[in-house]
Image 1 (cartoon, rainbow, N blue to C red):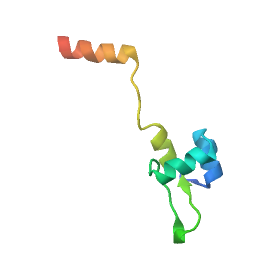
Image 2 (image 1 turned 30 degrees about the horizontal axis):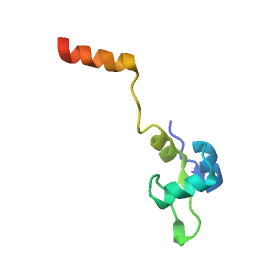
Image 3 (image 1 turned 120 degrees about the vertical axis):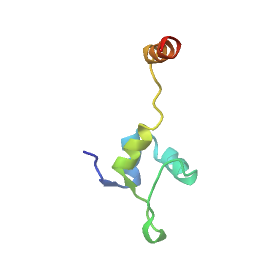
Length: 74
């Protein structure tokens, strides 16, 4: 079950294990999704931060080897 907790910037930075300044850089560059109701404070959904963290999975060497063997040997 995904959590839809609303996080403030301090909580989001802690969740991502990054500094607050890095979080604001990500926001400025639109690297991570955020919400800014009435053009005031910014907020984050925990589930969206989780998706961001899991978005760029790097396969292990054994997975790559298996994939190569599947292509070669069918």
